[in-house]
Image 1 (cartoon, rainbow, N blue to C red):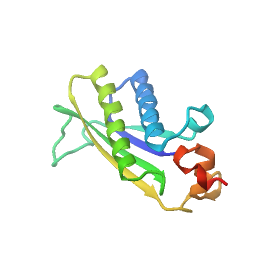
Image 2 (image 1 turned 60 degrees about the vertical axis):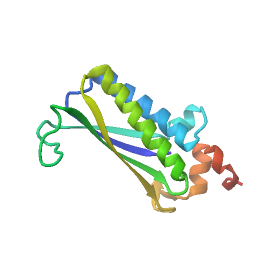
Image 3 (image 1 turned 180 degrees about the vertical axis):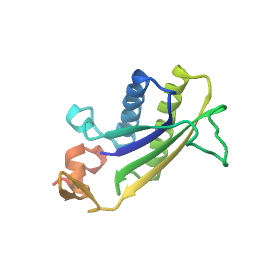
Image 4 (image 1 turned 135 degrees about the horizontal axis):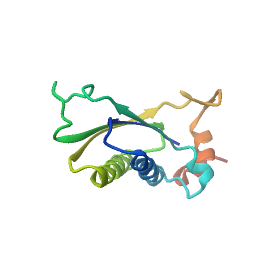
Length: 150
């Protein structure tokens, strides 16, 4: 049940490509978090894609977009869902989904910065109520955490 914020350079992706990114990143999250193939559980994977205006994205003080497509990702997940191995799977799978979308739309190399942020237990609220790892395990169906659902 991640919330994933993706920032891409403005104008690189059309609507179809943005939808493809959302599908690819959702699939990456499902793999890393062990979410079953269930549309109700997949619906809990929220992704926001924001376009950064030209001239508002820098690397080393310069605009890198003439050479590369820089993409920044913040991947928020409840603490305890991803261990180190699963975080690595998430980072690689998210990068691969973004690189695939870029390759289909643009000839430049894709460079990503993916920050996996563990939200401490009880620090995430859904629909006005604090949630805990057991609540996320119940709602998202994490296969590896079903022992918490009791």
